[in-house]
Length: 168
Image (cartoon, rainbow, N blue to C red):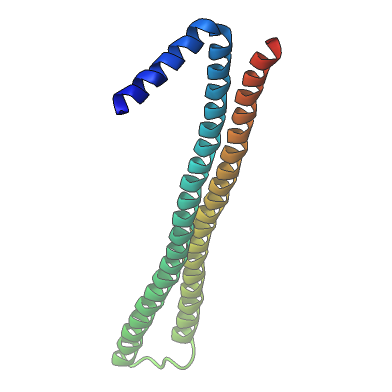
């Protein structure tokens, strides 16, 4: 039975192809342009999916970069506190009064420079994070553009198929 259906289908196909070759190829071309339109739209959405995944990865990276800047600033602050403690001990061991005069000015200047250093480290982390967030926004825009381009290619394919119909 299956071979008869296959044979019947083959017979009808050959009959139509021989009897109406111009219609057969016309409908085949229209069908192919419709398939091409669907594939174009699908490709656009696939590119958007990839761009969205890249954007999500970049946002996570931005959060990590900002956290790393904070962590590095904390490490610098801890290092400063240890160095300050050593200096205080050294001043005290040498009999210098650290509550007034030059040692106090040196410590104040050291504190100021250390705070500047910590702020710079935090700013660098925030700047790096901002760059990643900006790149994420660009990826999202690329995804939207890919979908739009897919629809544009689809419209072109359908217009091409429609132009074949208008010739008939």
